[in-house]
Length: 268
Figure 1: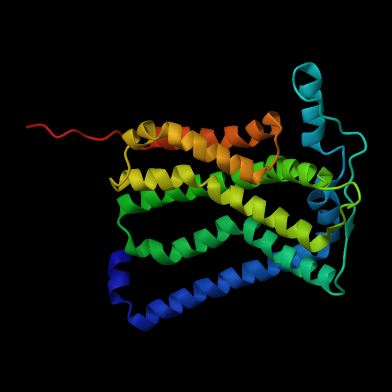
Figure 2 (figure 1 turned 90 degrees about the vertical axis):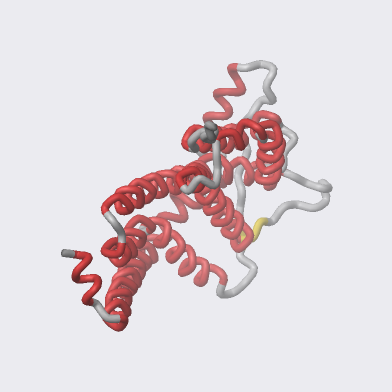
């Protein structure tokens, strides 16, 4: 029945259907952005700026872990605090608005995809719909998991190192709000995208482009590349914090290898 209705729709009917979907997406984003704008001061104090304080959950976890292992560099939560400054007159207002929008986009990500799905679904076969539904669920879960890892692990480790780093004792660090938010949003979204690696590998494997042999053949190369990526994200010589970032990314590599089918050998 849906296929018959799809065939009966003209080009302008499709345009109207797409416009209706886009209007719903805009409404969802605007309403969520306005709601977040209202409560944004509390979100800043309790969530976004939480890594600026020494009692952040990751710092306390690191302190307990390193205190129980004598050969690890000891991690302390005492005395760490980052004070942000604002050097542009309108920065706080524009950051208030832009952060509300980006967080709204993250929170409504599944809703936006679902609304787009309602437009595309009538053109797909039942088997294709099942595949897209699986990809949708996996993609959403992995994206939010990556965002959580970025917020709870990657950004705090990066902030802790860079905020305490001094090229000279005569040059104190005064971190601007703009710089803090740029790094915060970049690392969180980058980790969300990186965590989509298993989904991309699964899709390429389904299309026959990627096979498990690729991952086994280039595993040593991947370890070096992922270590370099982890070192770039957290530019610290501390092997403990380096491994904290490296291990989740390497785990994604192994999960991707597991999801990709083995190469089929042709028989004569």
